[in-house]
Figure 1 (cartoon, helix red, strand yellow):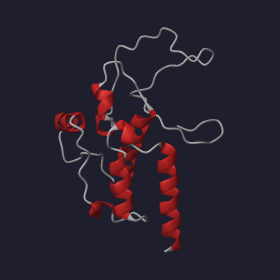
Figure 2 (cartoon, one colour):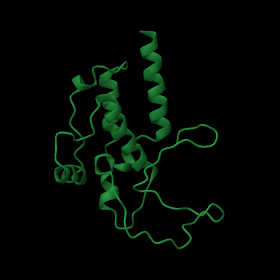
Figure 3 (cartoon, one colour):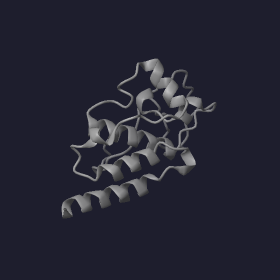
Figure 4 (cartoon, rainbow, N blue to C red):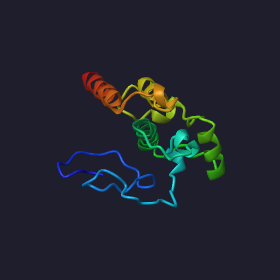
Length: 145
């Protein structure tokens, strides 16, 4: 999703909420169905009683989306849908050998390490600002080599 100034925004329409622009609240909106994109969904989103969506959820999903962009396959591509749900709920990150990232122009070991840090417990994940800083460093290093 791109804002009016041309900046990319993190989003997932399966988890999005309608926010009243004037009050900043959901305005009494009741959501009866939420469609999860389980391949990219953080475990706490699936396990939450109150549907709390945090910035840590976005970091988890960013890592899963990045993995798909780098490998050409959805996370957990080797599993059936029910098995993916089991793996996510039990906090088992996708298994992808670093060799699958061989076409990346970045240091694949560092990149894989960053992705894995985005799939840990929510409070232990980097912020998206930290992720951005590391990615810029990765690209700077790649351009210098």
